[in-house]
Amino acid sequence: MRARLVALLVAVSLLACRRETPQPPPPATQTATQTATGPRDGGRLVRRLQNDVATLNYVLHTLEEERQVLAYLYDPLIDLDQNLNPIPATVARWDVLDQGRAYVLHLDPRATFSDGQPVRASDVIFTLHKILDEESIQYASWFEHLDREKTAVVDDHTVRVVFKEARPAQLRSFNIAPMPEHVYAKEKFDRTTKVVGNGPYVLKQRERGGRIVLERRKDYWREKPHIQTIVFRAIADDTVAWRAMQRGDIDVTLVGNDVWWKAKDDPKIKETMTFINIFQPSYNAIFWNLSDPLFSDVRVRRALAMAFDRDKIIEELYHGQARPVSGPFTPDQWAANPRVLPIELNTQGASALLSSAGWRDSDNDGVLDRNGKMFEFALLVPAGAKAIVDQAQVYQESLRAIGVIMNITTVDTSAYFEQMMKRNFQASFASWQNEPDPDPYAIFHSSQVPPDGLNVVGYASPEADALMEKARKEFDHTERVDLYQQLHEVIARDQPYLFMIQTGAKWAVNRRVQDVKTAPSLGLFLWYPGPRSWWVQ
Image 1: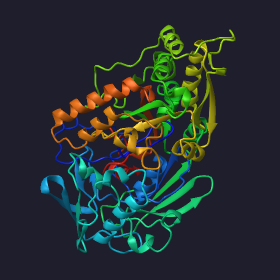
Image 2: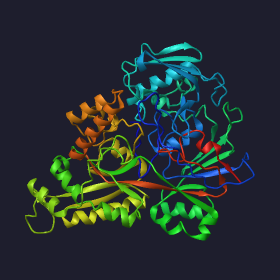
Image 3: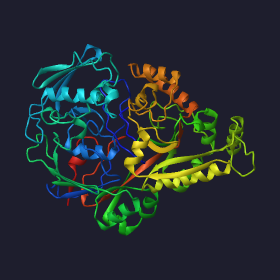
Image 4: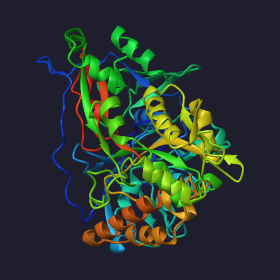
């Protein structure tokens, strides 16, 4: 799973080829505004980032904000259209050989990097090696069975990529961009500050405080986007971002449900912007560090889930714009098990489970204790995300009612991610974005504890491991559905996370931005042409 760990909502790109899964539904196209004048070139678009980027190294990036910037600077080998079908990009065509174990990629001879050098097959090989050698958090799991000896350059524009075993969705691994060997092989890879990509924009400015300026390439080899300048502004605070949106200082931003609920019917707001609502295959969860003695007992984890008032959060905080989640797949995904229901609020049942695990209020102070220690823990949350804090406070109140103290600890994004990857937390609020053709191996398999993967909670289940190992190799779609539904049941039973809700993403878009459309699952971004077709009045 090329999943991304983020504060609230995320978006990722994926690619499927020759898979035996149902075709995706027709695209849920939404257009912010339409005019009769037609597209115009030029102008400037300002996009908000919820957090500043830490790196623009394509292989080593970790945050969704970084992915959003990199999508303008790099083109993938293989792209997605609006229906999530694979289409040529840097690779003009491809051949699938040896029953899916070998892929011959034919690069578009027009493809160049922003320094004018052509994209070569050797750049693809260089990138694949870096993904493995640098243990890329985002991409390494896709290439763990790469046969490095047989993967080789055929000629300057042709590369043969060979895997030791076939997987049903292996082609999606080529939804990555090549990095130029002649640039990045010359210095320490993990410290480079250079950005030389093959995409339609180049980096012009990167300022402290989270302002990034991109300019359209004059020599871009594919169809040029319309907008001349893209500006990213990092604004962590949702309220500050909304005020900037109202002033016209930014053109596109995610907004919270409260803002959307209050503003969606306001005539003055509707004059200047439109809202686009998207349900993406992402879910919110509280991650339990299973190495912490507090959370090592499944009875305790289930009890904590029984204290979560999901209905209250959906109705009061999200105005009904959220869905219950019972496990690692969202309700609209084919891998989800409809027979597995979310754990319902049941404080009496929670208290009984905690008592069976030895937690009792022995001194009548209203707080459970065991062996002289109170049941108290810290929940890690990223700074500036009001929606997260609101949910955490509702949960905090429910836990207090059963004698459990949860302290909410807010940290900035870089510290938040670092603590997660070092497993330096007790509990953490986070979200995952699934792929439509999912592979949860990287976040739940026991071999994927950081730094090898994204199993930040340290979940280890031989039963779950076996199901994931089999499912990611199974080409029969009916069998894959059965395996993943079994996995859904096992993980829901074990509760390594408190599975919370799937939220609807609300995007506010200035009405001067034209031709804004969405794609199923991916929403506004990370498909072709997506924002490249946008233009501004």
